[in-house]
Length: 135
Image (cartoon, rainbow, N blue to C red):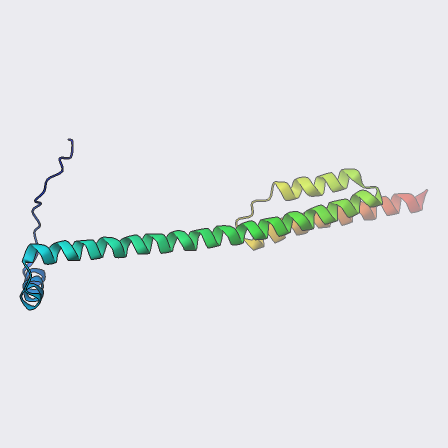
């Protein structure tokens, strides 16, 4: 059903609210309808401020997560380039792949994923050193 904009809306208040509004109206010498309109406007603006505040908090958290993600990416690239310099290209690529598939939902998950990739790279380094020493 289509909403029709009407100038007058019916509002049902319980007796306590109505008594409070009546007291405010008599003290400010305004009509009850004017007081109700002011209260509604105040409530809507307060709600809008709350929504904007929540948006700002969400944006701050998102920016913080982005900074953490960027720092993890920098660390991953540093370690991968170090492995490339040593000559372990496959391990470096595996390490970066492990990083790229990490779900950075929190710092613990990212740290675990990075540690797993690093441990894998160290293990492969040890195997290669052992193979070289046997020859």
